Amino acid sequence: MTLAPDAVRTMFDRIAPVYDAMNRIMTAGLDLRWRRLAAEAVVRRGDRVLDAACGTGDLAVADLKAGAGKVTGLDFSEKMLDRARRKAPLEWVHGDMLALPFADATFDAATVGFGVRNVTDLELGLRELRRVLKPGGRLAILEITQPSGVLKPFFSLWFDRIVPLIGKVLPGGGAYTYLPASVKRFPDAESLVGLLQDCGFEQVGYRLLAGSIVALHTGVAA
Image (tube, rainbow, N blue to C red; front, side):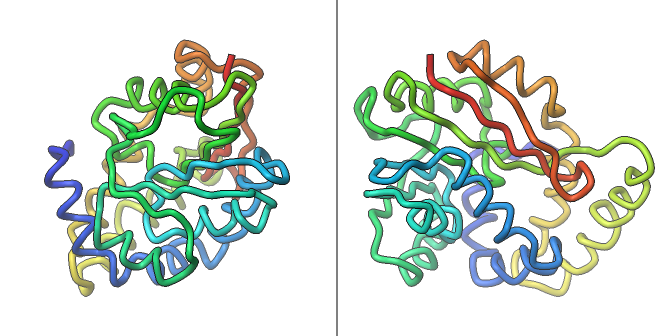
């Protein structure tokens, strides 16, 4: 299932009121810990940090707690940003990760939590992140990945069957049918390493979390 950008934006506008609750349900509350790990992996004290596809702002807040001097959260869903603004008085910007409204070499670090798989052109999105990072700037991408081995059947049952059923009783529940499809078409962890390197990042590596269901990729702008 591939949706046009406007359809994705509308979908996230609809699920904004239940987005945080569903994140906690789907991850048994672990998503906040994963966001903290992502922030701590790349944020240094005093950094100017971009949290792209920030959603309701949890990772942007984690960036601030990790020591950032200034955090800018960007998302293309105004309803998501409305929720984010209630969490912290940061700079919240309505914008598209495929055309970031910032000058070259603006940020010391950038984070993306569970957002890159929703862009229509992943390579362009990564190149935009590289463009707005200073040389030596650090990037962290937190994203769901497809596990192999013993966890694969449990992952399939949860994301393909149970999550969409939960979503059906919530506003905008169609998003939770879209979620499994978006994960399946997203590059696996090793492939994302190569794409990050092609897009101008070096020292690229990743860490698997939650038994390989989530991957935390990091890299440095060349």
